[in-house]
Length: 235
Ligand SMILES: Nc1nc2c(ncn2[C@@H]2O[C@H](COP(=O)(O)OP(=O)(O)OP(=O)(O)O)[C@@H](O)[C@H]2O)c(=O)[nH]1
Ligand SMILES: [Mg+2]
Image 1 (cartoon, rainbow, N blue to C red):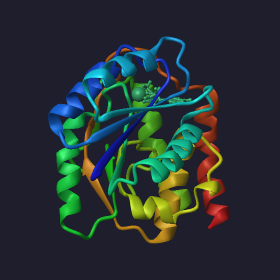
Image 2: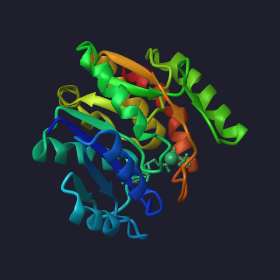
Image 3: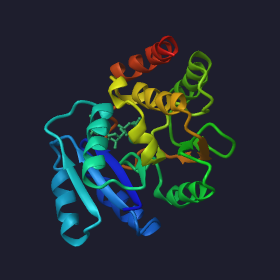
């Protein structure tokens, strides 16, 4: 398997069909693994229906919602054992990370000198559209703050859209991560950076979710404020 796209879901029945269809259009060779935390809205049963028509769609059902970080780490271990793809994509289910960028991410890999491509809002050509001004400012200044505190040379440290060489993901110690949300994204990038992974940031336009509800909580925001200091002291 060359490419496996992991999509974590919690109550994403409104967008899951759209994102799977669009991924199929953009990268027909890609396999998709939906990692669902027993969504009460029945997201998993929609995926099971899609699986009847599409053998490239897979489902990993978890018992309960434990946050994005735990869902991804559990899924990575399952993927290493079950599929072992050449490259892994991490992306949200709500169409904020548009599948049209997947081909460009793959092209960046073809050069042979990239291990991790990050879909970035904060490099030239990238942006966020549809967010309220407070959220845009929180994300923009939050990323500057995180960059200064951690020293990691990535403009979008809270980005959740990646294409990763599986060898790099296998090489880092995922047990080092104990957070979710924005903090998880920063900790994961820190592991790649410490390992010496070669990054490339692809400019993306991050759109507002096209349906369903945000899972952001005050806990996720406050964890994100503390995370850069935890990373700095770990280094
Ligand atoms: N499996 C799983 N998925 C989750 C969990 N929390 C969030 N997600 C998924 O992670 C992705 C990102 O969550 P979002 O709520 O979209 O976070 P966000 O994009 O920062 O916030 P919005 O812009 O408001 O959508 C979505 O696909 C969610 O369904 C969780 O606890 N378990
Ligand atoms: Mg979202």
